[in-house]
Length: 311
Length: 252
Image (cartoon, rainbow over all chains, first blue to last red):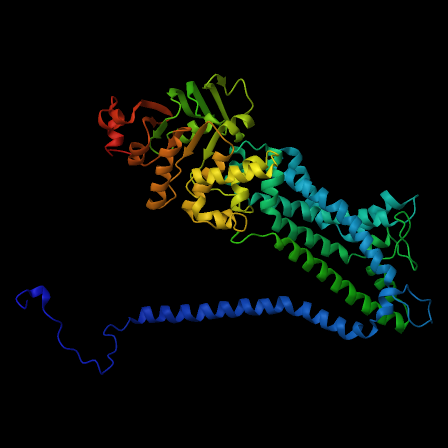
């Protein structure tokens, strides 16, 4: 055994004393490590800080709204219509329902049209002149100030016909469409071509592939786009001033003026009465909470059907 | 049962690139036919012409005669119907990510409007058994997403999905090139089983794989088919010098 030089046992070692590694890294390597350490932590700190900067205004607004508005919230706020000046009580029940009606109308019109246009851009319009025109129009429309949109809606829908809930819904729908169209297009573009080919290879026609495979695969992103558009128009006031107009009483007639939360908040906030100011704060709080609730509900519902391990 | 394919003077283009030039060959029914050749030689384009997938690319074009049995697939039928008769398995597993294993396998039928539950259940089981995947997934068919399986399992699921529409021909475009050796050997065993019932055309970069699974082999080079013969002949006594160079590893 001992004759084999390859099998010489290792020399006995002193295991009681810790020995520092023999090769101390060079100065350059040590500087490099130190620099990376500092940069790594600096950038991490920066991103945490940015997150706080982003979230802080939201938290601040919500806290202030609760502070100002929560005290005016009671059952009457949700069940009564506005009281005449000087009378105590009164609520925004008609405005809450009115907002719901106008937003439902806007979503019913805006979401299908927006998604359909996005599908056209992504699946059928590649390289076509019409598609470029639609894309350009959508981008411009996205930048049109909401007050201009309101005046335009007034000229087309209200002038000569009178203010109506329907006109309000159309104005908001037109504001939703560009956002939804562009997100739908972008989300469809992220669906890998291999997945479409899988469907074509099974003898599935293109229209069916788009409806049941491509759109479904892109649906989480498209739903997010729809929620963003919804949340954006839910608080719009300017287009509604020229279309839905507002109403101090109950109205369920789509061709009549209708109350909406942002309008009611606006009217109360610029009034000279303290009681109305308090109600405006409460209305703002309710509006924000309603938008948050709607977005959260849709998210929960959209995530429910997701399978184990789906990416 | 499978059906043979006669290809005569097939030419294909991508834009102005002439990717396939005058390909003529005879693919016998119920046999496996392998296509080998270096990357970019046109073998993938060739199989994509056999189920008219080639033309899903807007700049692609093909001419020539491809006869499946008595049917000229470019003259007598529409592409969507042809793709139901000619199944395809792609290089990378491409499960539908939003669908369960069951729905993935049933997708060819379901997306074409087929709704009978009992027949769907039976087809899914038969297809997964044929793809040698049934025992691994039978307990989580509807709970688990098809995308959550391992790569090898996904590819066998894609084979099951292609089989579920009951095709006569199965095109496999490098079906094992993204898989590990164990999964690869499972897919090869599967091809052995499947060729009893289907005509199989398999594109492969792996010459041992061609030798193991296919009765006939075609060698493609620069858009032309250099040689087509029995696999044994191609690998032991090729007629063309270029074939010999390729299979002995002198290039490509």
